[in-house]
Amino acid sequence: MRIGILNSGGDCPGLNAVIHGVVGAASKLGWEVIGFRDGFEGLLPPGDYQVLDPEDTVGILKLGGTILGTTNKGHFAAKMGEGTKAEIAEKVIEKAKRTMKQLEIRALIVVGGDGSLSTALQLFKAGFPVIGVPKTIDNDLQATAMTFGFDSAVSCVVDAMDRLHTTAVSHKRVMVVEVMGRNAGWIALWGGIAGGANVILMPEIEFSLDKVATHIKEREAKGNHSSMVIVAEGARTPEGDLVTQENEEGAEVRLGGIGEFVASELAKRTGKDTRACTLGHLQRGGAPTSLDRILGARFGVKAVKLAEEGRFGRMVSYQSYHVSSASIEKAVHKLRLVDPESEVVAAARAIGICLGD
Image (cartoon, rainbow, N blue to C red):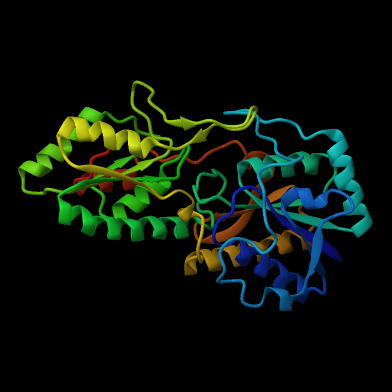
């Protein structure tokens, strides 16, 4: 038995833990693992891959990124703009199918987010023996309660907040921290609560700059001369203010710059010295937390189990502390967003955090 594994889309801490879990579980069954380099592109003839033995994964559990590389561009890039997906060209699928046949790959484990798993679903429908493993630091896939990489991203945010808080207090400043979160505010919400934010702005709750400014002024009146604001890149006002960047034609809109926008507007409204800090890809890098190492390894082991059972077209899922699986078709295109009426949001409000509404 020979199985393949690839990472596709953005990188995040824990990818190597999945590889470690797959190779370890497969070796117990006497299977050979082929790691395709740079995502789906590695499937194109003559195939860009390496054989992964248990010795090759020694020590990678603690490493960030992925030893196989990844990409969100190329022949398999399926994104065509907000809310739409393109079909992968039939000739590209046929080329990948030839590689699978030549290498005698009996199962292909695809580790990726919504876009990558959409591609995996199309390959499955074309006859590929696909198994999905969900990966996104945004933690926004509906079919799983948690994805690896999220805890590491939140830890990065909290570390940054701790550092910025001390300089904010020293200079009596308002610090605005921009974090990732295109559609979902999980990183902003969890990172903000744990990092001691005074204001959390996220995509699910439209915010008013005037209300945020009022909150900061009220803090000032009570003797709190510094404030910490955390804002997700996809947050917006009722007027629809959403900062975007230029992107390649046909590609998904790139977000970024909302932190500078909010900082500038708050400075005008409060008169406070206000600075912005964008964490960007810092949230994707570095070593995974212990939680993400364990979760990633468990996901890898479960993927091999699904391959052993011949349950293709399934995605590994984490629910109620148990690793199970769900249909890829039912998993993709259904984002898990923050419920404005949830207990976590209520807790944030209860401890005095302003959500801008």
